[in-house]
Image 1 (cartoon, rainbow over the protein chains, first blue to last red):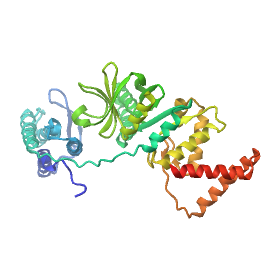
Image 2 (tube, chains in turn yellow, blue; image 1 turned 90 degrees about the horizontal axis):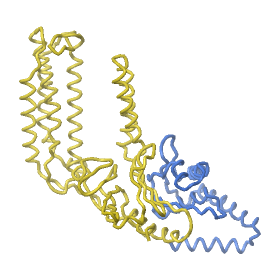
Image 3 (cartoon, rainbow over the protein chains, first blue to last red; image 1 turned 120 degrees about the vertical axis):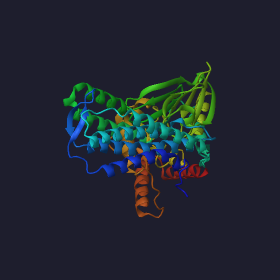
Image 4 (cartoon, rainbow over the protein chains, first blue to last red; image 1 turned 60 degrees about the horizontal axis):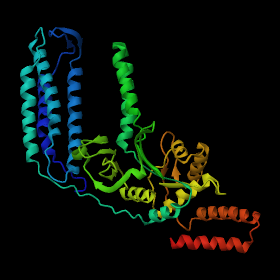
Length: 321
Length: 127
């Protein structure tokens, strides 16, 4: 049972059910015409023709993608829970799949009814996602809480303590460095910009503005390549982000009045990863659930995500003295 | 990773970096899979030339302690080799030969060199 999911898969039944319903309706409606109206004006008049499977393929593909994304994100949420908390984002796959299915059913009715104008399927749009969302929220309320068994690894810091005590009183340049550079960050910073660049090239003929926006967003995402780095020297602590090494935090060690190791839940406590805020503090992390909370003499609090928070605490504590 | 550099030391800075990475790997402060800062980043934070850091990283790569890949940070990838490996022993012979030669050229006697080696071995064993 090593790979058992913590978040039960049956909570995704409404989205999966709607998806299967769309597949069945498409199977019954087959064969579809080889060529049909695919694009419409605001008034519902067709202005572009192609294979209807382009539309249905997009709906099926996106629907499946969002179901899988929801399963993954709900699993991450469940693994970070220390007690049952209602996950309102659990129904976002029902929203997306419900909307896509409603739109597809409306288009299917248009094709089979040989209508002159496409009428926006408001009835489907209102009923289908609403039913799926309500079912999803009921299932989320019924979801049992399962504590994710964390591997608690104790850090042996004796070697580091010896090292730092050897070097502390010399005049050497002394620096401690650690990083958080998870695989998803590399994928986001490399793969997605490539896809955006391809999209920009393909849409260039439609108008350069869309392409320019795609390129700019791609460049922004690519700048995150390299992850988060923490550097501590004899005077300062710095946190840098991305390929450009953008300095997002710079503190004097003498201004740090408190150090506390903290276990946290990225989704519950801060709503995600990266540079985050909540009412208590500002946080810098890209992975994991542990870090070091720094309290400054002015009362500001910062959470630095770390895979070895005890090491960071020892380094800062030693260099402050 | 904890790095300190003594600019007044007779030991070249790149060797100081190499020896510290090796020592910390041996002591478990850094572990296989850990990332090291990029050449540019380490050079900037230590205030040394990029070529100095690059020399250190190339030496560590040649000793199969780190893995260097284009466009990515160096990662520690030490795979323990058997103590009986002929390759390990040959490498050790060649490096000790180098050290002994340096000692003799500095007019140290054989007894002095032996004493220094025994002192270092005892110190490391105690740790």
